[in-house]
Length: 147
Image (cartoon, helix red, strand yellow):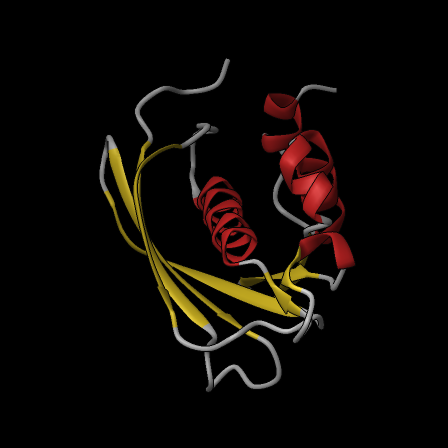
């Protein structure tokens, strides 16, 4: 089954797992997702291959950025009426504190979606959602429907 075929199904924890398995980098990072009511919680499990600073066991900043960008893409796909594979236009990331080698979580919020561009806000945290470790804003081109 292709990614386009999987995307046509309403997002559930099962379909999100299938989506994530079809994207090699998401699979490499080990990204997981859970549907919680109308929201999606993205999870980055700890793994030594993701460390950027082994002395303090901190996850590499690029991994956090990639995790948040992947979360934004999958969140946007899940929320769109017509299946579209978003293309990144711009991604701006603010690191607020270190992400240590434990579970990292992310939630996304579509701040605006037009016919050809969508804006998504992403927040990542570890122990307390009220104390984010990073926030990001992403802009996507969304004008080409999947066939």
